[in-house]
Image (cartoon, rainbow, N blue to C red; front, top):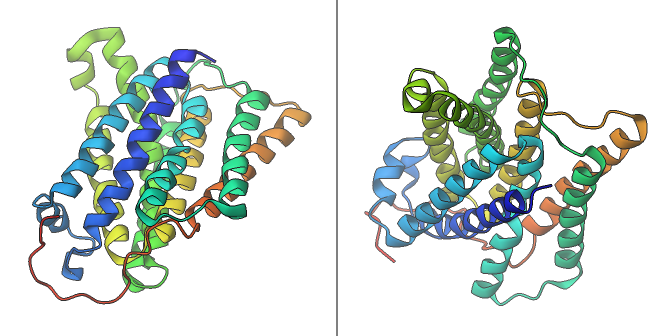
Length: 297
């Protein structure tokens, strides 16, 4: 594994984790009438803390894109999942909660799961799949699942809705990461003309904006502990599926390696859940709120 890719991915995770906490701090003040509406972005643009969170998220996405251009999606995605560690670090500073057994267990499982998956799988580049049907099948399944989750979330906005929206956003972000990798390859091979004549960069933009609306809607209706774990767990899983499915990423496939890869992924998911449900994570508010204009923080 390249040290540069490791540093870029972890730096991206740091920016994403800090950015998510700041975004949720601001988004929980948004009026519920903005739920699943692009208007939520326009309203939140007036809140300095949210803008700071978005700035950190954009920085994280740029660093992540550079990491994806230099490493396999199946390698970078598990590293990006460590953003929850940085989110917890900032949340702990805000809430002054100790880590305790749950925090240390979650940290160990997440870090150990990432290490186990990478060591067992040995992600490496291969030949991208040229069959367009396979590309669209995998992307269609991911986007279709995200649409289905969003539909159910609209019916239960204050109960299971935030978790479903976060899962949907995570799926879209995983596909976005895969298309970011393809866009980078097109730019490297043919420059700006090659990049802009493909559909992938426009797909990256559309998925990014849609995912952002879903995430902010989840943040405004529930505590961070309900939404961020689902988002953080879904994104790397979707990214790995895309990486292996059509980008040509290769993982070791012998029985022992597959078993350890499964153990690693399970450790990542359980670690994310433990950290996401930690008392240090902001509770926010789940009560219906009045509709006045947002007040800057």
